[in-house]
Image (cartoon, rainbow, N blue to C red; front, side):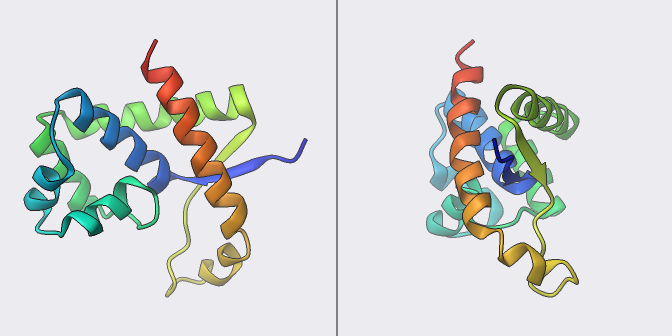
Amino acid sequence: MTEQLTTYSALLGQIVGSLRQRQRLEQLHMANALGLSQASYSRLEGGKALWSIDQLMVVARALEVPVTDIIQILEQRAADLHEAADVEVIAAGRANSRGGEANKSNTGAILAGAALGALLTTLIMKK
């Protein structure tokens, strides 16, 4: 079986989305906290945009969750995905980085991995 890929940003978006939903907050609330449009925030949660550390800090404050807790969840989910579904979580290359071009060729695999990661994260969160 071929190993699937997803990114830390995609996984982080799923985790933040789950935490937001548990608190019954709308995406617009989070978008406003970040100074983004709801559509831009949706791209973060959906794994289609890369998170910055600044955004993570603001979101953690808005959710009233220590950023360290979010990082611990991220690390655990990455390990769970690798064990349960052979999904490797990788750093997404930025367009202006050296690895950016190499990662563009994996876009389909990364998106498929993100979708699988979302499904598995939902299942894990229900436990």
